[in-house]
Amino acid sequence: MKQLSAPKGWSQLLLTPPATPWAALRAAIAAGGAATAQTLIDAGLRGRGGGGFLTGEKWRATVQSDASPKYAVANAYESDPAVFTNRLLLEKNALGVVEGLAIAALSVGAREAMIGVRAEYSDAIRSLEAIITTAEREGVLGANVLGSGRELTVRVVPLQGSSMIGEETVLLKALAGKRGQPEQTPPYPSEVGYLGKPTAVNNVATLAAVSWILTNGAAAFKQIGDPAQPGTVLVQVSGSITNSGVLEVPTGTPLAEILAVAGGPARGATIKALLVGGPSGGFVPAQLLGSTPYSGAGLAAVGAHIGSGALLALDGSVAIPELAAMLTRWCADEACGKTIPCRIGTRRLAEIGQRFVDGLAGPEDGQRLQALAADVADSALCAHERLTPSPLLTGMRYFEHEFYPASVAQTSGAVAGRSK
Ligand SMILES: Cc1cc2nc3c(=O)[nH]c(=O)nc-3n(C[C@H](O)[C@H](O)[C@H](O)COP(=O)(O)O)c2cc1C
Ligand code: SF4
Figure 1: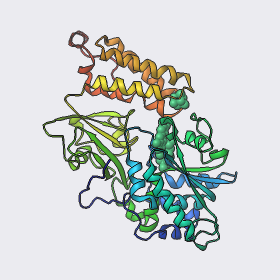
Figure 2: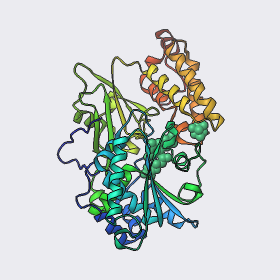
Figure 3: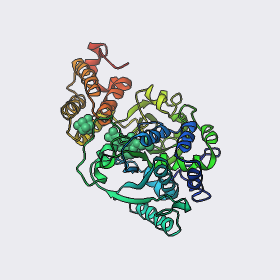
Figure 4: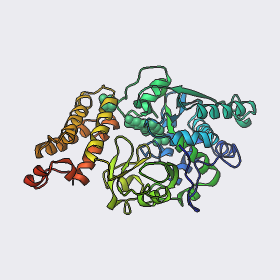
């Protein structure tokens, strides 16, 4: 997946390696952990792994947890099987990621840090290992980090398994060589993490942003993008689009503008919707693309979420019920099986979705879908279950006419209990 060229004026802070290697780490050591966490809070940096938690708060909580030793972990698992933004980031700016991780580790008082990365990302793994080896040789990492008297070991841990490994509590178990299923939170990893010890877990894009902020300042970061969630994010545009690839966009950019930067619809196509957020994402119809900003709040308002950063452009040849049912089936297959409402509920959702595809559904199926989706979301142990209903719910919300045979739609006067 290639990097798409961004318009002039769009900061490319994640995909560009630091101009002065290790200057940010030096600054963080001089400032100390508490001041560094405060700088990230001042910058408004929120995690890029999907949850959107304030990074500085998370580090502060890790420091405040009594137990030791503490750990820092970079989440480079990238669980969405069709998205490669983290891979491209590691190939382009492994230095920024390792530097951000080293800053995280020293700020929370850890002497050991790990990067959990997909085993298939061989170029990324090579880049990471080369940077760590050189840094150790030059005294940047190791027994005496930049002459500070602090010690830090950074390990790259290639991982393979289901998409659930991207979830942080599963990632921590996988790093310890254990079979993984999500844990109920709280307690969060900042309290009970790797080997049961306080651990700061951050997505790799979050860590690259940390490196940039420590060099350029919180104020400069805050000026980029949506003030409620500043900075840039990596998105992957694919489907019926002229140029597929990864783009670094300021938060808050309208979806239509992102598509325009990617060259607009593929030749001869008309985009009818965008699937935003990966397999458990939401459909956003064409008429809302201009008014929907790419931000947590902007997407939540239309039923979607940032998720993996995937933007799949869909043209008129795509049947929304079919795609929604297929995605729901995928999510049901990926559910780890730990909790019964998810194990059974997501499967029932997929079955209802299939009834729409097969033309067997009546208004009562729409009502069952709404009720079950609410139950599934309410009982969720982890976000996988909470988000699984999104494709069917948003598909139904915006493309209800595609879900019912004409006879049902006419006699029922559309369906009671729709989401909006
Ligand atoms: C099913 C599931 C899959 C996830 N996959 C990823 C992933 O691939 N990469 C990632 O960084 N976070 C993923 N997350 C979010 C992590 O659990 C966690 O919130 C994140 O790594 C924290 O880093 P951040 O604060 O920098 O975003 C996933 C969460 C869930 C529920
Ligand atoms: S909600 Fe689903 S994916 Fe999450 S722990 Fe329970 S069974 Fe596993």
